Amino acid sequence: KWDSEGGLITETLLRSIYEDFLVEFSINKYNRNFFMEESKNIFSPVLPIERFYSLYWNMSNSVKMLNRYCEKNKIEYESVLITRPDLIFYDIVDLSVCDRKKISVPTHGGNFLFGEKPKPYFACYYKNVERGELIPWNTVVFSDQFIYSSFDNIIKLLTLYENLSFYNKIGVPVCHPETVLYYHLSLSNKIPVNTIDIVYEILRSTTVKVSNELLLAFPPQKDSLDIHSNTKQVNLPVRSLFIRYLKRVAKTILNQN
Figure (cartoon, one colour):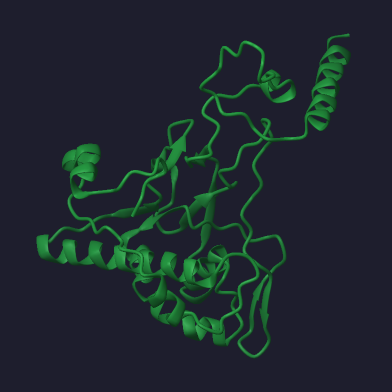
């Protein structure tokens, strides 16, 4: 497993980062052939289907690891947060306001571009007449990046991976994690969902480390002095950004008058 900077993730590295907070872990040795065999003949219009199977496998097995740890040490947790270790947050997340009886997920996805409000991650439309099941179009918000709920609710993910074949059989799009997780936790297990406003994004190797409106609208020329020489620029059409910038300036002037 490699981190966003291309470095090898090791036990020593993990312990240096999380110190005493790390009590149990497993470094996933990604076996692409295994997941390709597990997911063969399953349709995926976007990414290779084996990548989604790897995600579900990791999620189920992380919950199994948590359950084993609790049983071994006779520990009972009131709540559990499942998230990615590469998320960066721009504000404190107050989990005390969350109802543990429900599943709390972000209201919006963690993507930021030119200061625009991120869009929600919707579960796919799904209807099964024989089973009496419906996920409405662009209505149900869910996330595979940040899931918070009670231990009893999260433990339901133990059976997520083993149910994938059945979900595919009844037409649930297993290539869409938000839909699969919503179906498994909420539609099947009748756990209500609550959305919370948090400001975050995924820290990737391509993430722009420093950005502002003028840098986006007027990227420095290569032959000019760039005081942000270590800043990665967003590759967006300059004309489009410039027009949007002028509109924003004009709107500000009109409001002032």
